[in-house]
Length: 380
Image (cartoon, rainbow, N blue to C red):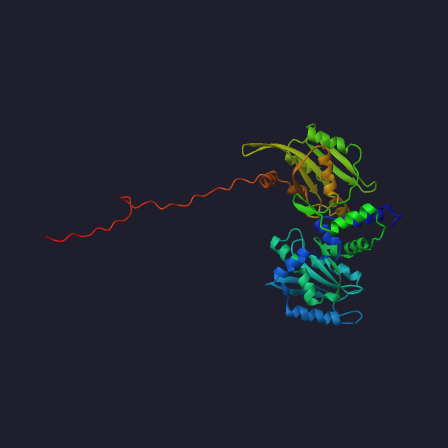
């Protein structure tokens, strides 16, 4: 793929580190020590019925087999089968069966019979409840172990139903099989990833990513932002030229005007110098906002490769602000323009004080003082 610019770029991004969600989606089988510890604590195991059903399906050597996939959910501290599907074609064509079985708010596992074994698909949408995210993430390794790790040849993690379809699987597979010779810098970057040298910032965690250079005008625009010439800078990535580009450098009336700068069909990096008063306190801060449409709210979901490339460039874009003498007070990530809310952002950056409710004190009894014992006198 060295002769095709698009594939060459994808190979480069594949060899670089990814945002947590995208890394889980595209990096295949990897279980960290933290995952092992979480699994040890979750206590959630597959039900006896699921163990038996999966065991029978795994032992089925028919062509085609009787079962192509199981959809499994967590119910009453057990992983249980909620649905199964028989083959309708070959294994690759049957990947199209998976997305329609998933939603954008309910987590689940899909045990999919692939070409050379079973694929453990872990679907944990961004919109599902935090408790569900924790349970499904911390129970994955135990599920595979109790069903028989030898049956599973691949793991695929994602947040959108399309991540598990034909296109999503093929993109993930191409990433895994990218075998361009690595430069010394790329080898060193990969070693940093494996050793856990992770950058944590803003609303999510991401590892050091692609270090694309900045095109003409980017540094000047960010210097203008820190110097007060304007209060907004929008940046993007030219995928063909592999550079970070300037989209806009302007002055917005207020934070609500940011919504007009958010495209509905591609990711975008935003820096906004926010001067305002919060509960009587004056603030002059730069906020860093990364927007990436996911298909909700009238937006168009970005291709996996594009999401991966932009996501893995977040740290580099933030470094450009630092180079210009600025500092981001807070990082936010949104899927669509309607999610940008000034009150929510203010409360995140500067939470309102907690009201200390004084404990009710029971008033003293009439007469004051403690109770006294009065002895009755003798009758004369």
